[in-house]
Length: 327
Ligand SMILES: Cc1cc2nc3c(=O)[nH]c(=O)nc-3n(C[C@H](O)[C@H](O)[C@H](O)COP(=O)(O)O)c2cc1C
Image (cartoon, rainbow, N blue to C red; front, side):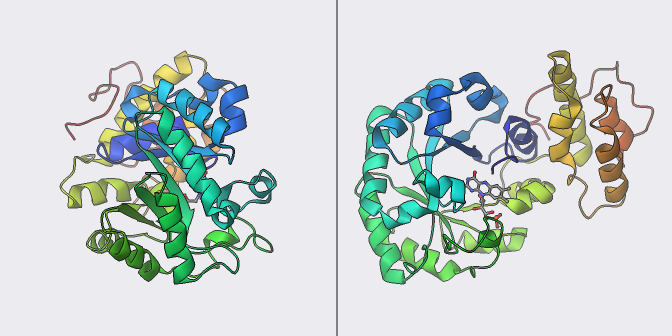
């Protein structure tokens, strides 16, 4: 998610759900090919498994960007066919590509040809007036000719004009049954459901009908849901919010030592205590102080509802830097 799932956010989410597949923000082919690659694509090894999401519509450029992404060590390269923003439409990529299934197929085929890691696609279930069940089946069938067999479907259509990207995530109704229909018709393909999943029960129930679920806003706003869902599925999961704060404080200390700022990390952690006693004060203390020039990792301890204020910043945290798999 643009501006949200940067490398610091992903490192944080990795602590919560050591087994989940994480995705980058969409990065355009132009940025990958011509931009500051280390800044755009660099990530911590602890983030694995992590997929790079690309935005573009030129098969050659997508192939080039996929090679660069694979070279950085990404575990999957994903093509964005779901973003409806004006900027993206001007570049003729994102959701408007749903109107050109053959081009999507050719882009994905070009990407598959040059990388070993899986190439996947994330789409809507329709766009503008192209929103029938038949259209979606035809779209998936054409795109699957590329050899791509993993589809992440945001279960609502997008309107390309008249709605902002935010409205396009809220106004078109969710239609999970369309995604279930795709799973039934393309039983050998991996079909992942996305859109509107905000609780563990729904996620678990949907896993009876599809191969995977992708959580977007809920994972960001209430990150602990990642730990709850992982635990419920029998996957490794963070043991406590406190343990996660300790790992993140260590990570923040290293980041700051390397010239970074606490805010770049802490801004993703505001929702960690969502629904818990002390959530409000955690959020307030972080938001009021994390941007200060001398804000250090100790702020995380000071703001943490379940940690003593006296937690010593010089003392090594009890959990080593990296994924707390023991939790
Ligand atoms: C701030 C924000 C940025 C987003 N950026 C992307 C993006 O870069 N690529 C993408 O495929 N989807 C993006 N999305 C859409 C989400 O991935 C997801 O499809 C959508 O929010 C519906 O899922 P949810 O209800 O679980 O959030 C973004 C959503 C938000 C809220």
